[in-house]
Each structure stands twice: as structure tokens, then as C-alpha cells.
Image 1: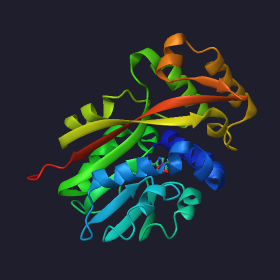
Image 2: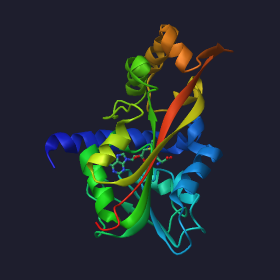
Image 3: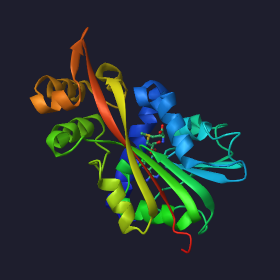
Image 4: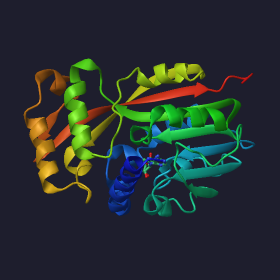
Length: 255
Ligand SMILES: C[S@@+](CC[C@H](N)C(=O)[O-])C[C@H]1O[C@@H](n2cnc3c(N)ncnc32)[C@H](O)[C@@H]1O
């Protein structure tokens, strides 16, 4: 790994270390039960199967599988985030998702919610493919823009919130990337999460200057952005219906 990559990793760990304590309350989607249930249903993990939660964070997704899957493994690069996941997975690895510490064909299913925006996508998707058993499923769930019309403004706001973010997604991006990686049975669906911007930016990793820039971006946002995101200014807060994309795919049976 180059020194440049090392310092990006350190920046990422430091960002999530500062957020870890408040993380579970930092966005509506973190603890959104219908969203979590949707991911669980799509993964279709039986009691005989094992699951890998990539970028487990504080364990909100892994937790939904405990008692349902035979064995739940979590992995994260940030020790402080993973410390909060203790007890929500059978085993937690501190490692980089771009270089998974698992043998080929290890897991029946993999999930990753809101982690891929920080990773080299080519490496991370190749690793998921490698560690899945043939026929194994992967579910990815990530914030995206609605499309080209709001992408510039949505990506600016996302970058201001988290400068460690490497990737910004349009709705069709994951399906295309996964097709290129030989995944099969690719299905994508959308999910809308209504977020209070005050809550979304109330974390100790965002300084006042960036918080003000985010508010200003909403105040100055275009008509089309406001329409697509159902932006509402109410009681000193701003409400944004953000789009998430959920992609389900599987590793080819003969692979
Ligand atoms: C926004 S949180 C999502 C946590 C959890 N998946 C959830 O849905 O609540 C992103 C997580 O990705 C982790 N992460 C980022 N890059 C990573 C990498 N290359 N390898 C492993 N974990 C990574 C961060 O440490 C953080 O815990």
C-alpha cells in the first residue's frame, strides 16, 4: 500500500473514531427498521448459512442476522466503530475490505451498507466475489443521487459531510460495476430515507464551517434539487428525502 493510501486510511479511521460514540443517532437510516428488514429479507440467509457484514460499523445490520444465520462475521477498518459492534456478530475482524482476510468461497452471503463509498470499488467488489461461495448472495445498500439532475448538488453536500468519501453513486452504478465483475441475478431497488439535516450534520467529525456550508448549499439549492429531494425548511431544520440504492446479486454457480 502506498503512503498516500495509508494516509487516506488514517484519515478515514480518525473520521469514524470521532463519530463512533454518536454514530447510532447520526442519521435516520442508521436504525431504520424497514430498511434493515428489507436488507435482511433480500439476503435470504437460512439458519444453516453464514454471513459477512463488510464495514460492520456499530453492528446495526449484523444484529438483524444474529439468531437467524448460523454464523455472523463482521469486518471494519476502524477499531472504535467495531468496538460498538461487539456482541452483535459472532466474530469481528479489523481489516481492510479491499483485502479480505478470508479464503475463497467462504460465505453464503455478504452485506455492506454505506461502506463502499470509502473503498476502491474494483478491489472491494473483486474481494466480495472471491469470498462468496458459488451461488452466494451479496446485498449492497448505499446513498445515491436521484440522477444526473441532482447529482452535482447531492455529491457536494455528501462530500461536505464526509471528506473521506471517495465515491459518489448514481442509481445504475452498482448494477453496472457488478455486471463487469461477473456477478449474476443483479436486481436493484430504491429506498427513500427522510433525513433531518440538523441531525445528519450533528456529529463531532463535522466542524462549524462545514455545517454552515451544508446549510448554505440547501438554502441555495436549485428548484430541481428541491423537487426531487422534497426539501422542506421547517422549525429551523431542513428535511431531505435522500435516495438509497439497494443491489442484490449472486456469484455465478459454476464460478
Ligand atoms: C457509514 S459507516 C456504515 C456502518 C454500517 N455498515 C451501517 O450500515 O451502519 C461506514 C463504515 O465503513 C468502514 N470502512 C470504510 N472503509 C473501509 C474499508 N476499506 N474496509 C473496512 N471498513 C471500512 C468505516 O470504518 C465505518 O465503520
